Amino acid sequence: MTKQDLANELKEMYENAQKGDSTTMIRLFGIKYSEDLKNCTCSMSEIAELAEIGVNYHAEISKGIRLAKYVKIK
Image (cartoon, rainbow, N blue to C red):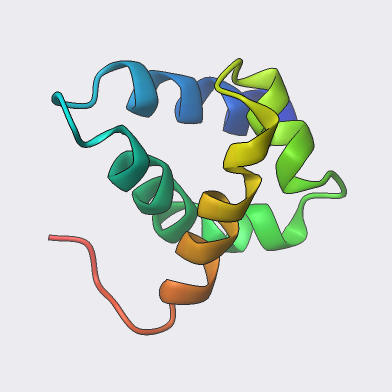
């Protein structure tokens, strides 16, 4: 996936999150796309900025990536 593809998916997940679950959806994005994000030549800040969710959410994406080796998506 390109960085724009990843950003588009993140934006969609964030915008479609139930009330109170937006940060959870950002972490889920990191889990779901961890391999794509690891192989991306861009930073997590860049993905968050392209998704128009706020650069500071890069930390939540990174948490999701780290969690990916421990969890499975239902």
